[in-house]
Amino acid sequence: MHYKKKRTEMRIAWKPWELASIAALTAIFIVIATINLGALEIPSSCWQPHDHGTDTGAGTGIDEVVLDFGAVQPLGDVYIFLRDANRTEFDLYGSASTSTPPGGDGWRKLYSYDNLEKVHFCNWDKIELNTNARFLKFHFTNESTGKIGEILVLSRANRRIAIENVEGENGSRLIDEQNRVQLPITQEDGAYFDEMYFVRTAWEYLNFKEPYEWTHPPLGKLIIALGILIFGMNPFGWRFLGVLAAAAMIPIMFSLSRLMFKSGGAGIFAASLLTFDFMHFSLARLATGEIYLALFSLLSFFFAFLYLYRGSPYALFLSIVSCGLCFTVKWTAFFGFIAILALMLVCKKRDWQLILAGLLVSAAIYLASYIPSMLAGGGHGLIDIFKLQFRMFDYHAGIRATHPFSSPWWSWQLMLKPLWMYSNTLDGTGTVSTVVLMGNPAIWWGSIPALGFIVIQRLIRKFDYTALFIVLPFLLLWLPYALITRILFIYHFAADVPFMILAITYCMMMLQEKRRLFLFAMLSFVILAVALFALFYPVISGYP
Figure 1 (spheres, rainbow, N blue to C red):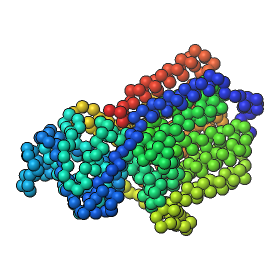
Figure 2 (figure 1 turned 90 degrees about the vertical axis):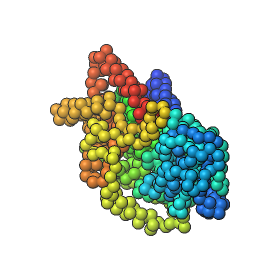
Figure 3 (figure 1 turned 30 degrees about the vertical axis):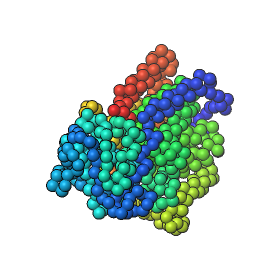
Figure 4 (figure 1 turned 45 degrees about the vertical axis):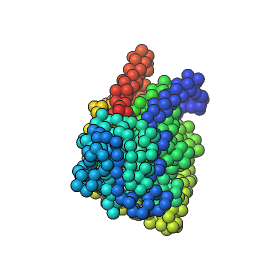
């Protein structure tokens, strides 16, 4: 055993001030992350062109809807809530007639809309008009089958324009929930970025439909489905469990750092940095699998360190099971599993039976996560799930898609190309609602010299196993992406954030013999991280 500590030193209970501090940090994070997290309701009564069943509100194929504002209005933007993933296509006409809707020649074509090439589900789409009109006519094409939850018309000053009358069969369904929509429209009012894949699939699981998103294992989407089941089909419902997952990482981070450095102060320092890291915050508020991947990854390394530190067989078993949970969210968890095996080999640990037991439980969890997929549609057997794994591999191996905000693996820690996940310009106010995925510069850039120092001083000149536990997982969670040819994004770096924080904490702890300098350095660094979080909050939260 390379961690030669007395067992009495290993089992020190949390002190009251430590418990109070970590509880306060966790509560602060939950409060901040929940503010403007998501609307509690979205438009529910839907309109659909043509006859697609009585439950949709469609009638006998009426495909035109005319909105009357009662007088000529300065139109700015038209927002359309796309309730499902089907195609919506229409031509939009306007008229400044002061009386009844005009005939065929009295309409002026303003816009042609078709979302066939767009990913959409439970989200608002915006049409910029900048014209004057009393009437708007939506002429839907024969190819348009999508459900529309609501149409909202705003003036150039970004104020809601009251709709006095609507013509078209069941057209009232398009304007019957105007008061439920709070202005301005931001990310909290609907799905954005990859939520349109994950939330849609979560909803499909709950309704026993064929899952749309099949390129990743199901666990992340099943957790999102649980949130929808508890809180409803709304942005708050599909995001809140992600906030709780991110909040759970804070005491885990504290426990790992406290155990690693035998200091409650080190634990609070590391937990504080995680609390105010930008990526940790933004992923907590995004209903995809990334935050659950980060949670299970951190949990697996916490148990791995506990095993190496105390020799507890249960800790190793739980570490492997946590890896399995991570793998059931995304296959990239395999990198973390390799890192844990590498640590065991370096530390000369050979408890292969425990690893095998953990792998068997992980395999059972992985298989069980596909039960909703087996029940979907006409039903599927184990052979279908087996074949799906090869389809998943072929998809990721052969993907050639591009994205304007993809970034190479080597650029992530430098934050050369953050990921712009959401943006909406609010006309008339001069403001923008935006969500940019990036890290806290104090942490991400500050960890570069910290990691370099650790490698040189504690791995090359004077070997230290604690330093190895920081550097080896950091590299093995990151460098394998150099071998992946498909497009990559900065969120693939999320699992490395705790190790960047541990590297900074390691360097801070080297100052502890100089108590005043030690306290000043730690406090100053936390203040800097918090100040940057406050400065960038509008950019990372969507708050206009």
